[in-house]
Length: 99
Image (cartoon, one colour):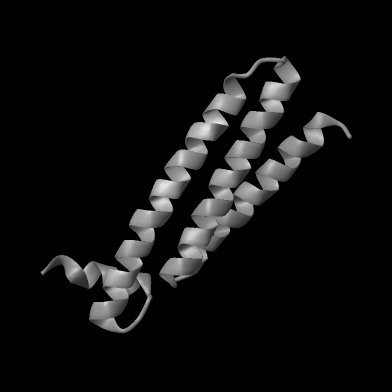
């Protein structure tokens, strides 16, 4: 399989994740869109690492996975906090938590 097809797949996944983040109002679904975008970046890093024959892309992909794990923990904590106060996981309710 040609390596450029992996780049096209990463681009398609990034667009799907971006559209999910921009169109959905549910916090959990928006976090899933961000995760899809981060995974598409990992796919691109690994593909470029394979194309150029070095390991830097794989190291970057590892760090992206660490950041994604931290993002899930913090993001879900915020969504749970919004849900407890507003009884809805909508992202519109997060703006009202300033008080």
